[in-house]
Structures are given as structure tokens and as C-alpha cells.
Length: 245
Image (cartoon, rainbow, N blue to C red; front, side, top):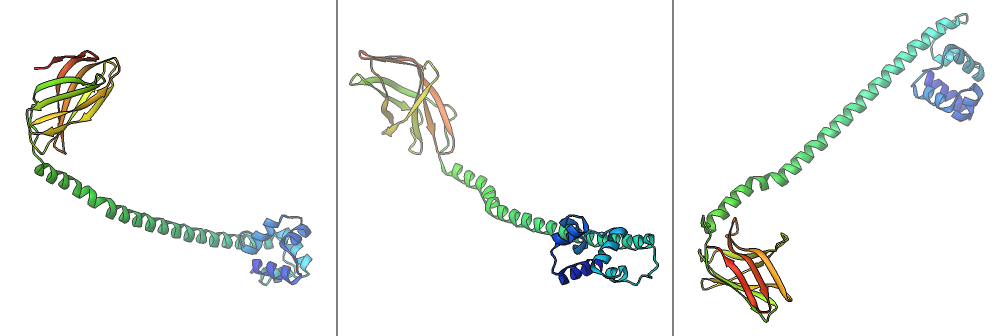
């Protein structure tokens, strides 16, 4: 074949692709394409290559061509070769594309199986686990009530609170939240013992005030909140608040 013959003749001369390209006034990439079968030289250039290597055009092409064959007929044969090379290259591209598609599909399938095995059980079990937990925990009351609400100061610098929750169940946890007039909320966990919640709240220096105070009860799954006081004020003389009935 033409590409193999050009490569063989070049190597027999001990020439590089760059050297042959310079002799033919083409770039090295052109010679590389000829030898790879990616393209073929035109009829005029083919004649120059044959003359340079001192072989006939027939020998260079690897086919039998009469000595008096004109350049148009040579060009026609080169066109056939070019179509053959183009078809071969297209087939190789199709094969490469098919291999790439298969690899991508395999990788996607593997990733899907991995993600499915990793996440799907959690997605299936999560609702069931939550439902089981909800049935194990005590239900919260629809309306949260509290009585015996009292605030005081400790050493004139810290708030102390206590209240009796309307649903004194051991399975509940309680917290209390103080909301400032600026909208900031600070919360504290309550100590629950013998039916009463109590604990220490925020510290203050000379004076501090809160727009409201509420309590929150939780059974570990859901929460309820209830307002227990408004306009709560603390200073060194004591504390004042408006109870919520």
C-alpha cells in the first residue's frame, strides 16, 4: 500500500519525517498523515515522491500502472485510495466511539448500583424507623399549659425561674426561651424533677428586659411551645413580669 511504501522507502534512506517533508516542501504532519493512511498526496506530488526515491509511480502505489499513464488517471487512482483510507478512518472512529459509549454506560451502571445500595436502604428504612420511634415516645398534649410560673434573681446578677408543666410526664424534656425586644432568642434546658421545672436563665448586670418568655416541651420526635410571660424585667431590686393565663 502507498502509506507503507512511503514509510519503508523513507526508513531505507535513514530519513526522518521532518527531513522528507523539507525535501518535498510540505510540513512534517503531512508526511505523518500519508504514512498513517489518513490522507494521500495528489498526483503531482506523488510523481515527485517517486522521482525522489527513484522508483516508479506503480511501485510507490503498489499497483501496476502503464508507463504512459497520464496524470489524470493517477489522480483517479489516488482518489480511490483516499476514499478507502477515509472509510477505514471513519470505521476506526465509530469503533472508538462505541468503546467510549460502552465504558460510560458501564461506569454509570456501576455508580447507580453503588448509590442505590448505599442510599436506598436508608430511604426505605427512615420512615419506618421514625414511625417506630413515634409509637415508642409518649404523645404530646394538644395544648401545653403551665402553672406556678415564677421568676427571681440570684445574687442580683442571674435570672432564676420555675414552673409546673401541665403535662408532667417523665418521657418529656423541657426548655425555656427568653426573647428580647430586639428579637434575639436565648434558650436553656430545664431541670425536671418531682413535677416541677426550674433552672438558671440569662445573666444581667444592672437591668435587662425581655418581651416574652415561652416554654418548649419535646418527646424526641416533635415539640410544643407555650407562652408563659410577657414584659419580663430584671434589675438589682428584683424582677417584674406579666403572666399569661
